Length: 300
Length: 254
Image (tube, rainbow over all chains, first blue to last red; front, side, top):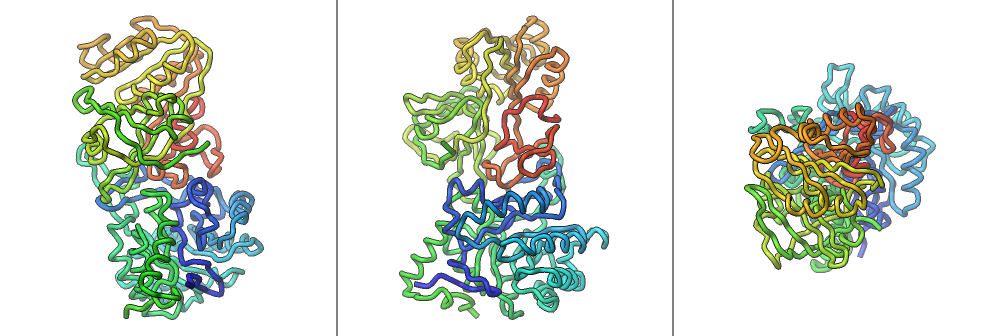
């Protein structure tokens, strides 16, 4: 049975990774799951300098989901390179480093700093507000998205995954912009902007007022967008958004995702990633599928 | 030793006050390594409630392999737990967090509202002179349990029980002295205790609360502002679930 897939020239032993920000750099979850079993570990977004993130409360549970506005708290690229990369190198898994920034210069600085590090892929979070453009996210404007993709690609030594924001009218327009900018792969979806009001406190549940909605509540939207993008561009797609089990993962793969990410489900059950991998194998065995590629994009 | 995820069987559950419940669980893997001030996170059986609910350990019986949780029903998750009866099971992860650091000094234990339960296990583990100060809004609970562990003083907002006012009013009224404060309760209470301890040159360990998602230090949802740069993100945001929930009062800005 073949579970391995190759995207942007990088081989994954199986098509399961984690969504950035839900798994740290693996150290905490490594107490529960064997990181060697994952196709890749996708790390929490890292910027050129430390970011202290948003005020608390940063999260709120919603029906079948949760919202977060952590604000990309991270130690900056120097600490990340000296602590988190060596930690992950101990394991036989791909390393996908998620990069965030407030300006083109921020992103490029991180990407250049990672050039000589042994990481397999870069994932660019374009849902961060672009300070220069008055705070609209890079990923919400096709021109800005193409430009940031080009700027990153010009300096990157590793293949570049652009992580798309779902908070747009036409996701395929963004996918095409990233493709035009030279992206090697796409990942989607990031969280959907939401709001929750605590009626007893008469206040927003999250200090930031809005937060990114994730979890099974958003899965049908994510599957639809993965399907649209996979059929609009030639780039390989990493699909995510509410994957709780192997059935969910297979649904994303049938919609066109070559790799899938487990995000919020890690909080619900720290063993979800391993259960998804085992569940995919079980499904293939029962369905008589010899190669995972028979599943990827099989529903047109 | 580290946290484990397990299915625990309910030994018994009783209601202590209006919304306050006491749940005893068979969880030897957690009980054998847990200590006062740590917590467990309980999972709802309803898939729509994704996040585990952090609840502090009220008592730990390492020999019997049980833990006791005393909690307030505040929403869907805790309402589900309140319906658990003997023999039923619940999934949980723990023990989580750092717990109190026991010092051999005259201690004042202060619990406010649903911050009272962890004081019981702490009182049992502390082998020194201890005064226990409890603050209630209205209904009282756990008083008898705590009276077997030390001298108990009470403050209540309505004045029906003990001193009318808050825990610091009780400390002043009864002239309670000590060298270290251990406290758990609402943030305004902890803020006042921090100030009181500073003025009186006392050490203080404060157990904080914040909305949590993962409970194990990965998601960075439950941070508190720390006076010094934290070890994880190198900003000034310590993680309540992993670096805490117990902090030295000097470590945190409240």
